[in-house]
Length: 186
View 1 (cartoon, helix red, strand yellow):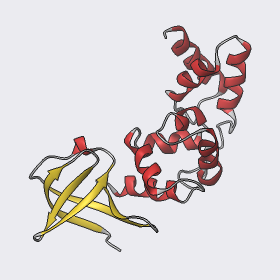
View 2 (cartoon, one colour; view 1 turned 90 degrees about the horizontal axis):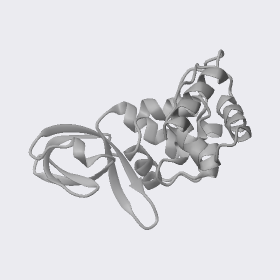
View 3 (cartoon, helix red, strand yellow; view 1 turned 180 degrees about the horizontal axis):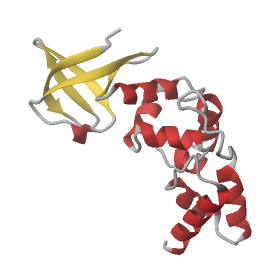
């Protein structure tokens, strides 16, 4: 396994970069190519994906991002490419907050993550990534979602509003106020 690469960025492509490490160029899939600069020296933490049909490297600028990726691929039904695509739209901190607060709406907006995958991520990873917040209500987003439905808001609008809220320690009233504010201003 290749743990990390340290070298010069010699090419930036659509979803990958090429890194020259002592005259050997490695092609590495990355979540956000816009964070790379041509001819710059970088260190990438890597994951080597080997499947029946494919073999490739995935790179991360921080070990925390690699940890988030490694956690996601441990979830049933989430492969390396799905995990990488999900990380294109979020960062580890926001991902961990969403998992901790049961925010399936936030997870469902990530590419390749549907309702079943979002629920499975929470089921498999909650409590393993960040310390549990005993003050928070573990079903707060579900309860707020039901309250908003009773107020007549459409499910899509509710999910969009809740997807932008990540407040693991907040009570239902605070989440409801934030969601109502977003729904009224949309």
